[in-house]
Length: 213
Image 1 (cartoon, rainbow, N blue to C red):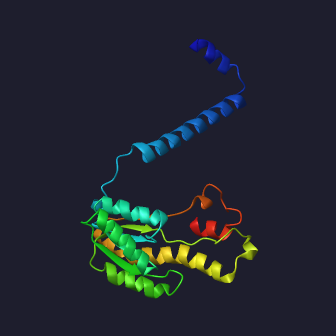
Image 2 (image 1 turned 120 degrees about the horizontal axis):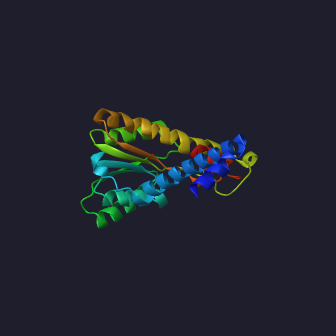
Image 3 (image 1 turned 90 degrees about the vertical axis):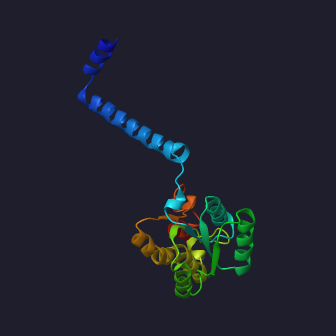
């Protein structure tokens, strides 16, 4: 049978054999990528986050994904620096975490990322001085209040999208990274969006998708 297949292939034109080879390589490449994705997402052992440092900083921790990260990091045994614009919500989430994970130390920093960002980053720097920040979760973000065409995006919303989603993430990283470099360890997670991956240039959310990309 092997001999039969060999002779059949040998009788084919060179261009067809080249196409078959390229197709095989493409399938092989896709298979490797898929298997790697399965391993990374489902099979790889969890990391010990405390090896990065004893503290984690989370922006936008009072709702949704950011709140979920805060609770999970506390469950993993990390202390928290929570950065958000609403002091009441920061207090509520801090109390909720402490009620569930009493050993967790929590510091809060009130920062409006659409406001005086330089002053906010200054407060973050003062708060984390001397702390072993090993994990940074850049989660803070803003989107459209409702879908709209690009030319309908007003100046205030345009400025907030860029300032919060791009400048805010960049400046917080700039504030935290030097300590990680000095300690030669750390992890930074920037929360993106399916709007920038699954549906590139997400229709009616173009600026949001661009800032998240």
